[in-house]
Amino acid sequence: MESSEITNQEVINLGKAIITELGMIIDCNTPARWLVHYIAENIHKSENCQGEEKESAERKCVDAIFKLWHHRSELPRGINPFSEFDSVFRGLSRLDNSSQKPYFNEFSQFDHQIDPEETAESKQWVDIATSIDKVAKELVSESFNSAAASAITEKSKKILKLAPEDSGEDIRIMLSFISDEEANSKENEIKAIESKIDKVEALKSICDTFIEKYQYDITQIDK
Image (cartoon, rainbow, N blue to C red; front, side, top):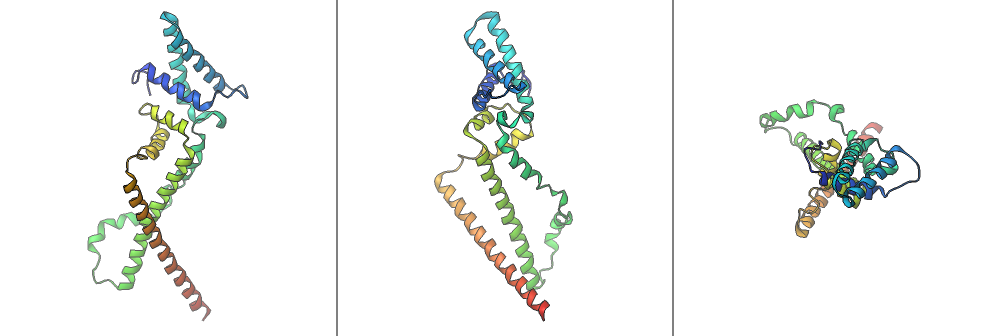
């Protein structure tokens, strides 16, 4: 995010949105709060002065906004506009695939070589595994969408939409959760939800199958 890539007014608009989100909190005297007040003061000057004084205030304002934006993740919780999203980021970090068994994906290329004469029971369990994998991924995605919807306020959403390109991975991730929020019609949204319900019902049925299997396994052990 460099000043040459966007106009001063775009940066100032971002600064205004940040100040609105922070609510000009002054309960304790931190450098970040001082910076917020400094930005607000220079925004006021840039909009109400003329000539060299206006240019100086605008330059100071833009520099301060860049400084605050670059260090947004280091701001104290009370004045960090995206602090509510921290739990979402922590959750996403726990989905690191490095702990998964790598050979699961390696065999995808051999799908066409699977023997069509395989036993019905073997195929049944493979189909169950792939069904669980598909639905589980969708439910994980749905859970994070709900978490993001709860974490992103209307004010912080405004900041995100004003964020310059290449602001960082955190902004890209947050934007990905709100980019399609108004893309579908009500009819399509209902159909999508009904499809999700069908998939969850199928997963419930699979879970019942596992319960029956485990109960059978217990009876076999007790014999």
